[in-house]
Image 1 (cartoon, rainbow, N blue to C red):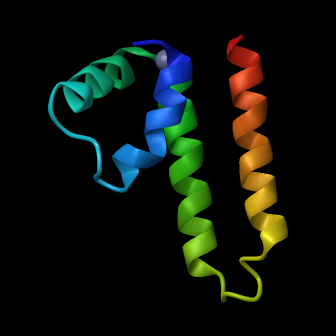
Image 2 (image 1 turned 90 degrees about the vertical axis):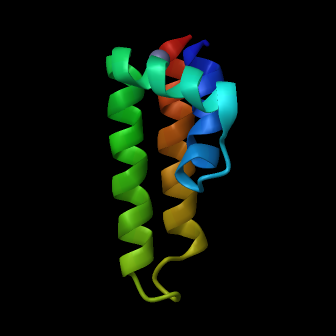
Length: 78
Ligand SMILES: [Zn+2]
């Protein structure tokens, strides 16, 4: 599995919707790949922050920043 594919599956995994061989392959890559581990950590931190904020502060802008970080990460991999 490639890092780019990992980035597409990362949110699925966090939602628990990844299963079977795909999940096994995902976990193997995550255990061995430092950039993906760092990204996973960043994503978990972002999600936790958004969940702690009241809805009016977990604004479209905060989400936009989270997705901007994701785009930067993907660009750095390519
Ligand atoms: Zn990777």
